[in-house]
Image (cartoon, rainbow, N blue to C red):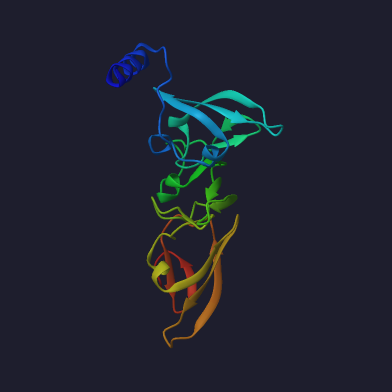
Length: 200
């Protein structure tokens, strides 16, 4: 008799007459799992019952395939997330942990996940950056400068008009210098001076 009941319940699930429960391990990751229940995915949609601030459960859905990994949350009963950066934006590993980015043509601003799981807004002026070099450093967008200067310069700061850094001199001491972000070539360290192009 017990086995007949189990078989009948399974048949009802496949017929769509009973809800088919999905474990959280099978669902997209995100903090929404702490306040949302009865979640299920179908095609690209995630649907849950999520609590709002008054404790009432609301049915809500989101296209989770457009979300950055581990970024879905419950905002007052509504599922939200940080969207995946578009293909036209700078390339780099940041795309795995940052989302809802804005690209001005020279400045990239995103929401990025920190090591503690929280998210924060960060920006980087990317024109001086090497290709495919933007990354997320614990919530802060950073990049690698084009050229050989990266190996012998530290504390690189990229602003809207200037790139500054401390660069090691031949005698082993460090010197601070800067160069315009309009540099089209590679950045070099010329005996402690950050330089656009090759050293003279």
